[in-house]
Length: 378
Image (cartoon, rainbow, N blue to C red; front, side, top):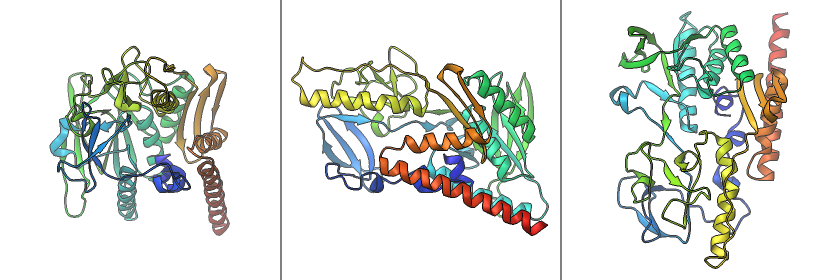
């Protein structure tokens, strides 16, 4: 729901509840906010810096370790120009995009249309392009994707719905096109301006942009930093290699799940749905290890069940496919259902209740505002 938070269609409590709220009322969880500097898996300890610096950190011992740090966006190819390209994966990215939206809106008041380039035609790129176009209606939005078609891994229904919405919104789609270079054109009056050099079928072209949004290249970087500052086995992309029990190979008391991991026997999509389904498997196996004698542990193996997929296509628009295509829904009803599903999947009952109320309240307030604007123009 980062898109809704960015366009003020959702509240922080609905999108990213704090650990303090999530853990409220519990007495068995100690929350430590800090940065993991490294993992000493041989001695069963991690090193944590509470200042966020690069010092050696404070050692913390463990009986079992669960690693779920997610993936990070990879902009190494454009390291010198990374300040121009804004990733969209974290709540910090969301708040930064809100600031840039406000800046561009102030420029639009002078009658200037802005050019926006979104790199990556997967789920995130399409959702971001449509929500950005809705927020900045007079903007020119270009979606750049190096594959043959956008949403190539989506269901047929969601892909065609998404493509139709892009065309209806006037988003320019460039497929089989790669970003070769980003040229900063930053000035005191425009801190985000750049030029993007594109390559397609051996031909180069250049687009000047007021805002460059990056949704391509999200992966665990194999840089030896943080949890990768360890002897834990990882693949070429820096993902920790696990067995079907989500146990890191060679380290029976270390678990990994989500985008930071790769099950050696099967390739799973890098989605929240996979990570959510892996979580109870890790929880049970960890519990079994700690409670049962060695050799008598009943460990579960992870098996992914594709429950379908959901996409936001705007503040009042979405598309949903579920149950192997038996359920196909788009438009406003899909948007409402999508928000309710997110609320139900909150970690606690109280958070689900709050998310449901926040979602309903936001929609009602928005509709009241729309009705008021219509009445004022009559």
